[in-house]
Image (cartoon, rainbow, N blue to C red; front, side, top):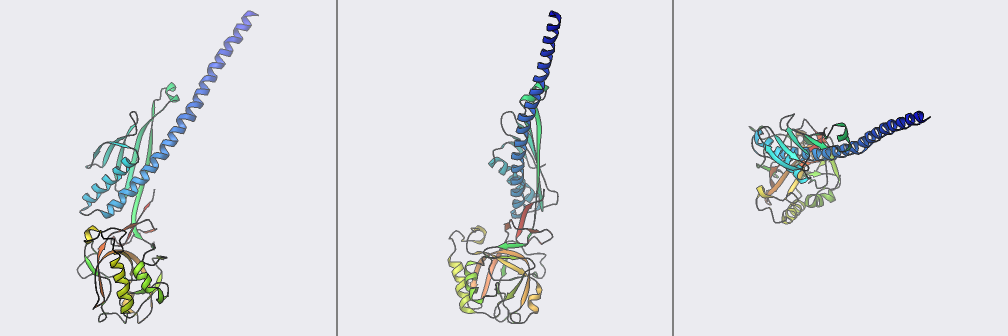
Length: 334
């Protein structure tokens, strides 16, 4: 009888030990697994933000492709620092950085450019500390996150569009419109095409022309939309609209190289097809893109509005085969 009791006690001890192992295993799965999931979600958010920031910088940066990539790399890593990651070191030659989240969690970031100067990819790897799983011999586990941001011409724009049209064609001898170069945004009354001088009647409401010229069109226009031309040179409305816009300058834009993006002199205009010049009087033309300009001057006598082409980044859907001089849209593709 005593032997039987001892055997039963031994069985209970073994079962208890097994139950403890199972319990610890489930605890490791719940606590460490939950921590790894939380860490992955956090790193994914940081990777997404860093890729978007890097891609925006890739568009804005001036210089050759290597300079653009270096600037994009720096911006992506800077965004990680803004989001709680400590950067131990960064290497611009291979676009890598050593990072840490705390004293025990370190890792590496790799920034790459899958499609030249159109895409930025961020790969982030961190060795994350484990707790209950240490009992089974594992003290850490690698958590990875990856994001790709891509740029392309914006397919639509909402709020602030000016009823001017920028022609699709380029100046003779130029490969594309260039940042910092002055362009005429309207035609003089002697050079108009069939009574059209580059102005648009965006929502078929001529009474709104001055308002949209001075304050911008509040609605949305998309590539492929057709808008009507606003023929003739309505001197009073044009003069008032443009002069009001220039006079509303925030005061921090003495030079086009040093403009405030929210300044009234910074305008978005639709790019229209070259069919514009073939039409007579009030007619429909197609929008093929959008461009951003800083208004330099308005010749009241000849009705010529001059602006410097600048680059802009928006979050609208993208046309990924569009020329670089269009307003660029940035979005996550992975």
